[in-house]
Length: 435
Image 1: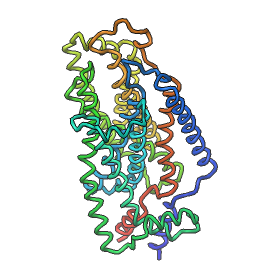
Image 2: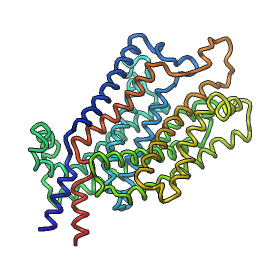
Image 3: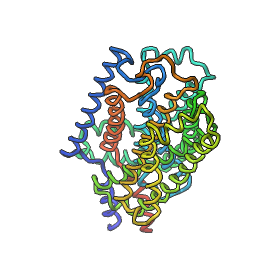
Image 4: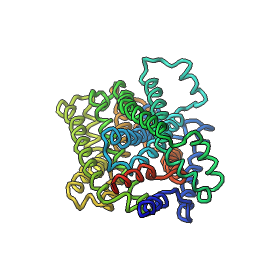
């Protein structure tokens, strides 16, 4: 009887909850930001890319910075879900659903922001009619599409046992959501055979998504590395991008862990021990990314070729120096110092570190794109002064903020519809502990 009571208590604790007033305000803010972004995009479609501050030299600006950022965050799906499941890491079970939701939201807006960056999005179909397989852009389209569908399946399959539980609580979910759950889980009976098939399918997806995730970040890095520009002409870019993606992905999970834990009072399920373990993972990733940053800049700095000198000087001590050192200190150095101490791996410090890592990562992506474009191999001559500088217009900021808000809105909606922590997995773990 005690076990059943505890089991029912777990279910009640982890069932999705309706938005309260604060939740509705949060959704309203996100929707408002998205609507401002839609209006800015309408202006961009009507008047063209001239409403942005991108010109002949800086043809990739904040949009492509956001694209690289979203692609990086999406790696969290394979980091937490696939690696933890395949390695049999039991303590990671409460974090897998959070990671899957972040991955789905991020990869959706990674795709959207690419379309926004196109001056004529109505010509998107030409990519499929006249695309060349020799182009890294086509490779990126293929792997992003593949990654998106695998991420969706990796979110859906582990949900099936939970949907069967959710169908028992029609009065809590309401008739609309109950019909939606019935549609999603109509074929799931919860038989032993289905559990075995589901487990095999999840393992197969976990195996498949890891090389696809590595490929998506490697191919994205090739979009830069195959373009002959100072700062991009590097064979280190693939590993550099992957290391950075693992770091920002883990940082975003830590932020989400703290928010969901606090907002939904999940202290019994997301414990200080989870933060401590994620802190150890995070500090390792920070050290790895620091190594690749040193490797990325030390070699060209040692050679100091004329074509790279202007770019490096601008980055380390010129007009981009403040942003560069802010990104390095905030996103890598300070997190390492904080996380080396046990007190720094407690929930609140970890939340602050997670925000630092995510913010630093966004500025780092901006620095990968913009300074290089302002330092072409052929010096700028006889061009308007505005071509020599770049700062995003309000339309670019509005669209970029809308893409970030849209990602958070998707995650918010998913956590309203589905359990944030897998219910059936938690129940199974509880029964094993009791035995």
